[in-house]
Amino acid sequence: FVRFDRPADEITRHIRGMTPWPGATALFHGADDRQERVTLLRVRRAENPTPPDIEPGSIDPRCYVAANDAFLEILELRPASGRPMTWQEFVNGRHVSDADRFSSPETQRAP
Image (tube, rainbow, N blue to C red; front, side, top):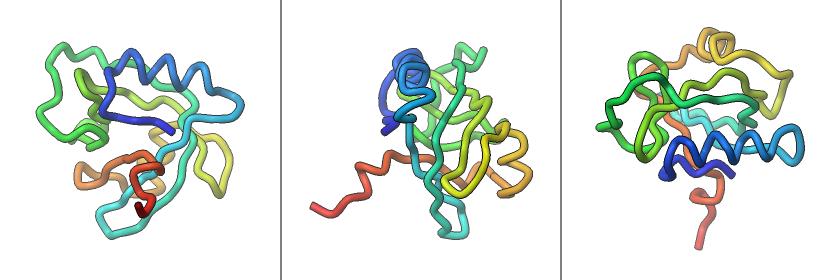
């Protein structure tokens, strides 16, 4: 599972190491209360030296995802129900906004 509360470089190495198998999984939470499990296939640290001032996993207006110390740019992912796609295809198809966010599936389990 991807934990967005970790440093951006650590997250990118984790995703690279888990691809193609077993995959680096995260939950996408839409502002309309929809949830979707996705596998992140390719990400990179965004070229923005400013640390995020939003909660890790949150999506900013540029559609970057906040990590602990920097923003991540998602390049490619695979929804649980589909084929691999670019982040832009996912954004367009799901109408992603800055009210949406990512989380780790392990944080969603009941104690």
